[in-house]
Length: 491
Image 1 (spheres, rainbow, N blue to C red):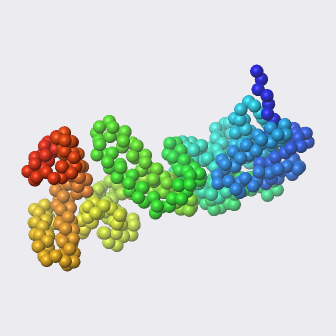
Image 2: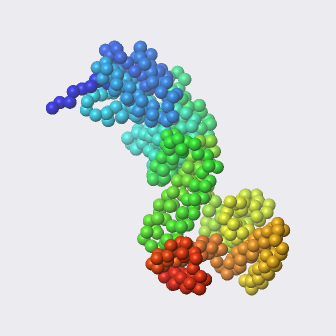
């Protein structure tokens, strides 16, 4: 059975710009089909189509370019079904970098799409550049999808649809390194044609792009890796399409970033089990998404992109490892903590050893970082024995504060002394080679497992939570000791 045709769409190309380059077949189709549509009237040959409806209003109203294309295709299909046949005129050739034609052709067998070949901007670009695209192995890339389509490519690339400064900026930010001078080609074949070589750093500043602009990149260091490029593109898509993502700011995402970082730590605690590795992979992905999201927000402000973040940490690590990538200023390969901190201080122009310590660090981790920084200028105890004495002294001061008469003064003194005890214990942990933050997390996990074991034992004995809470001290201690044994978490 033959599927009936629900209208026909005839697609013609208006060539690269010069009306004299429009084909006779295109002009004949215009004469023969009275219902006509233009993807855009902003083309030097658009007047040849005569009376036609333009889709330019879609570009102004839509939040993203794919919405424009989907809307155009839907309208053309509806009109073809209603009128039997419509003409659709696009800039250049319908067969070159024309997303709407791709979508039309993928529309199913119930509708005929006839495409008339035309001269494209590519033909003029090859002539102006003096390039044989086949011999050079040129790859054609859509500027609006550059990060994904150019991922892994080394060049040469001809990038179309570079119609806005934002597009040029996103292209620049997605490339790792400086590929050197590139060529911007504009309005080829028209009286105001311009072919301009620009430095990569000036790409989004040196020219004013328009709908007849393309970009030639003769060589290209690899941009972001393919999978990372897909993540970056998805993040940008979520920002344009999802109400929740669109509403987020750097500030609103702080708690999510912190939460994901802690979930990575939880996953590390599960190693080396197979489930732990799988969990760590997942949680690292969640954390990476937070980084990509913050980079996207910064990119929308024209500040930096994901590639800049990766490039920055790469260059920083190289600079801070002169013993691997070069010699220190004094000719030695000094990789000590003090040398590391000194390099960071010089890079960032810090005047105090305490500058740059994040105020949002957990209290124990922050205390340890403060102590390590102070130790860098000699403000430290000689060894663990000296710190033991400090801990014992702080405990004595806490007991003294606790024995004071009740009142606001006692409460303030107790809080201050508890802080001093904790701070001194962090110092002792550092001297003993233990991480106070991780040690407390591990102790809390052990305690949680014991509480769970107590609840299990109580259930075996028919005790609910109220009965458990009412046990006498000796019975409660026996239950606790048995729970510790079952939990296998030590004394």
